[in-house]
Length: 177
Image (cartoon, rainbow, N blue to C red; front, side, top):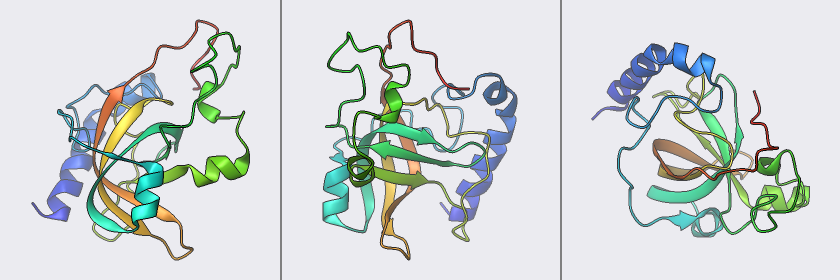
């Protein structure tokens, strides 16, 4: 299937889902409603750290937790699954923003995260209302090509995303708008 066909399909479906996404930020269209969402688990995956250690490669499956979603673009960051988000282990913690890994240093967050984006055939990040069906700290598997940008940073060019888990958070936590 050509990149252009996949890109056009993605844009068509995302445009159709725009009203639903606008009503429920960070909790968008259910599985199967757009071209990036995978209906089935893509199988064995490597962690963010393993992906960075292995280097640039096509046909990878990387598992991580959604750490940051970029509004209006098909872009997000995922965090290494071995890093605990606030309240994951100690349920008594009253952190109002468990997805920001605020208990970890900025250096640890940078070393353990990976930028993920969907691009068009020119390499430009797709402009969309949100990443499909993703919410902060969801555990996901992403298929695609791991690349390095001009600054030496790893970037995963996604062609599929599967949500493995959506953790239940304490009642005091309010999802961001």
